[in-house]
Length: 299
Image (cartoon, rainbow, N blue to C red; front, side, top):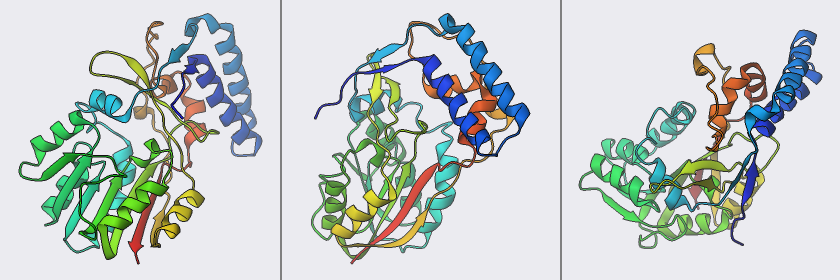
């Protein structure tokens, strides 16, 4: 079913952060002063409700449209890499060099690392813009436009399939695991990292993005649970070799840019809203799962 329009209101997001922070305080994680400060901040936000405008109705974007627009700036600064690489790279380091598929390779971040370690890398992505950046870093490496569930690789031809920070954009994990099982040899590994997103309380977390032609929309995104991953993996002949869930660290003062007034005609991304309520945002996300990381082996 095609993705639908969604409505986002900056004030709704800020109040949601306050609510999560208050629930954590209600559970005993914060004290009375923190609770009263959050209630006072909620009153202040509501008293100044007109400041946040009328909200925005957003059209869905395809992954290619969204990532073409993100390609030039994707590699940094990108804080999710700080959580992902210390967990994923040791899993990759433990595997011998071989024929490796970087599915949803993006700008080639993992492909560069693996090629430097002696792997024969084949990279695939839906976004021409991301592939253009990847080619600038990886001359001579096979890079092609393809979906993660339809890779242009022969059966049983790869020793490793890597999928980094991309499966959140796939509604159904089954075809992805079926394709990985097809291209992997017996004993091959599938290493996955999947972001948990930022919208606590929902299995969805749409990302607001701008396309190369200036359209602003959202990229549909899903938070897949551990059970979803296990069902898809077991159904296609995989065994679990490792599973990690790195947690978000405390937020320092340096993590917050000084708040700026919102441009009422431009939909804000939620990262840009957090500095308006730093204590609530920090409390809402401290200790929550940043990533789900898997190492599966093909039987």
